[in-house]
Image (cartoon, rainbow, N blue to C red; front, side, top):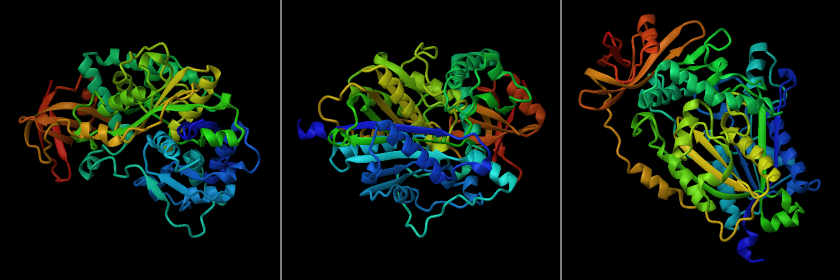
Length: 518
């Protein structure tokens, strides 16, 4: 066997874990990482102590380490999670990283490790992540303390990989665009208006899109919510399914308060043989790509497409030497329906594709464990592909607000030729060259809604958010008046394309869009 073939990367083991018990007994963050890692070792059939030989380590960032409100929670933290895990396993990796925040991180980490293995820089690596907001929030509410949350002694800060920029500008955050539950509905309302569907017809479409996800979750032993729901149940607003950000009631939103972990072991072909892993356990990464859209929401070309999703999908399939029609399994990142709809369009797939768009059940039903959901997608995809040798599966991963995209194409079919990850800069330069509207930060006068949402609290309306165009075609972000009549009207009648006036709010803190009477 040639040296090139010996350095082809292969996924040799996977593991995942879900904890649903009392918060006081929940595993610590390190404990969750260990559960997934040990399960991956068992899956690969590794000998005891084999994990001490890991020379590459990657841990997906915990949600509590992201900037924002979660970073302010009064809980102990691991100062260097990869170093803590390495000590627990008795390993001394040459290369160790902690990712930046973003749901793309799992697939991006796998792509990076595989590139290192193909280049001969790493032989045997672990990619793993966990989320523990479920038990963490219960511990805080119940004053249970964090006695089993280990702290590092005095570790240096870990090496971070990925793009660590915040997902929104201060101006966008001031108007409410810094939260996924507020921003993804903006894409959804733009999609509905583009396609000319009525409010009622579009809600029915969303129910039909996500009902099959619930059916997959109901059969998945690792899923957080193992309940199949009808399309009507998903979109009918009621006490258990309150509106969050129009048009999404609770059942259409990702659930972050879970306790879940997942990881994969990756080795060179040569190392996999040395470890004694049977070849019928191997899954190859046949294609991969990473890119990001124009970074901030106001910069986007439009709110109905993702050039990064389209181009990373094309590149990953090209590297694998197949087309979308050759895929047997799909796991599209599914934090909200708009991510799935735009993801499917980017790959040229119909929303009712009979293959389905999830192998796990998706983030609202399987669970959305912070930045690590896509790792669960990959582990489940490995199971599917081992059961159907030679078939191909595609996983997508999305960070921030349809911003950061990573894609992987997998199969048990051996990879032929030289494994070469394309320079992400090639795609990125194409995206950065795309035209986009001029932005105005102090809009004044007549204006039109480009897209919008209405944000709810548990008991009432909270605010309206508008992305609009002024008379000169410049884009702006604004809030609407907070009175219930204005907000109810935006949920009753299509708001995209509606005229109004925009000005600075009386307190000077935000822009204010006042819709014209219908």
